[in-house]
Image (cartoon, rainbow, N blue to C red; front, side, top):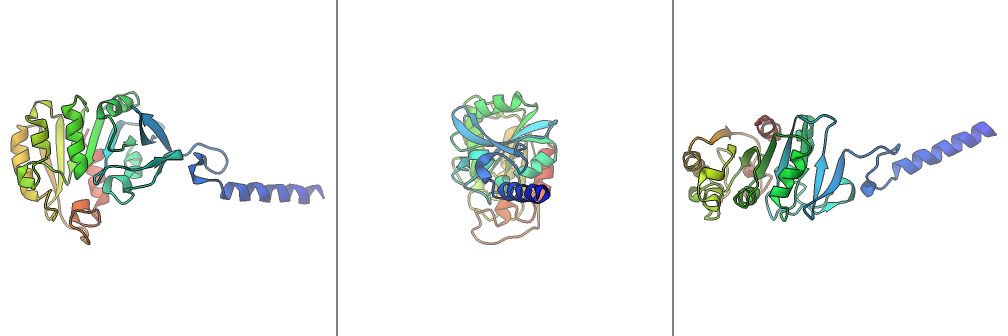
Length: 242
């Protein structure tokens, strides 16, 4: 009788673990989730942190930039964005990772991650490169900057670009540009890269990518603009730039 009772209790506990709410911040067994939601300067962000981080990255997605961070490190929007969908891969490279919303103070985010581990690298993609430049123009001081599929110069196709937002390369940290040779987005044309490298005056270099997959809107994440099929190469380049 006692054996049967113990087995019944065990089955009930296992069932409870399987239906544990995702947003609870716990895994079966009561251990902390790998991802957590944190407040940075009043803005909600998602943090992923290995036990002994080698460096930190701040990921600034494209689009409208709003990830809709929920409890327990959940992300409600922009799940397909190249930086959002690869966030766990940066942690696998030994980096502490902060995925931020569009309204974040980049200065506050850099300070937050610096307290975890320097160097702090800001990685922005598409419209996130505009927001990264705005944050740096307002005083954020990351140790390095990675611009993927960036709004870089007038030749990229948009007047609101990194070069114009900063005005001069004086505040630009050492920078890596990652760009697809066949990016078809009218705002991030490959023709904008060489003028940016020249404007940066020795502070920036470029890593060109080719191949992968291309489907749908040329300014969205399933095409060359979003490095579809090339996630591992993008992460390896960005994670290694420190």
